[in-house]
Image 1 (spheres, rainbow, N blue to C red):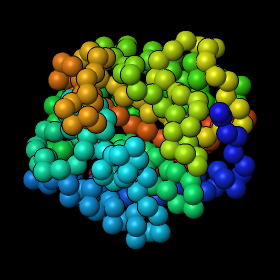
Image 2: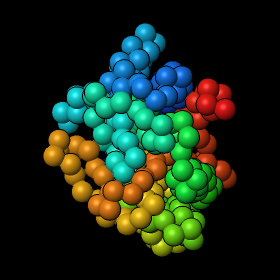
Image 3: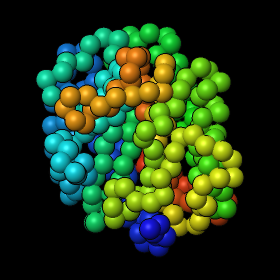
Length: 256
């Protein structure tokens, strides 16, 4: 079922979403060689709880942590632990919170130290595709318009779109309808209407689009072990434009 949100509900989702952006910025302050992903998770959980919210992922379908920390060839759902960040790594961090009964959800891929140029370019193009997809997310368009735009953009550069994982609606539940694939055809799929709130989250691979689940049952990585990038915003569908509810502003003030 697709839930159309009231203005009050959208404001509550925005409040949670902005807190996610601030939590990711706190994490960004620590991202450097030598830091463990477990430490990043601890900082994020403390920050979220200190601001009157609870981690949205922790316990969700059994996930054990506040953050998903996915390194290099890991696409999503990496579990924080004793892994130590190294110079040249990239790390995709996905974070969710619940505040006042509504979820916020956002993801950002960070460079750790000096990263190879082709990988940095993957990050740049993936984030670019997110905003191009967002531009398509207005009332009257369809989810296929979003997916087609993202796919068309990144494939021009030889990248591939993960098909096994998609964006989603968000609100009182972390994953609501509709699904929002990062591939598709123009004019196809669910029609977007004012008041819908969705997460657009391109997951783009440097090599093949094929992925596998690692032995921990959560972490999804590329089959060819090439890098993957992930950026995500929660947005509200409006008549003439898409309104971004999350923000990368706090993160990018830290990493610039």
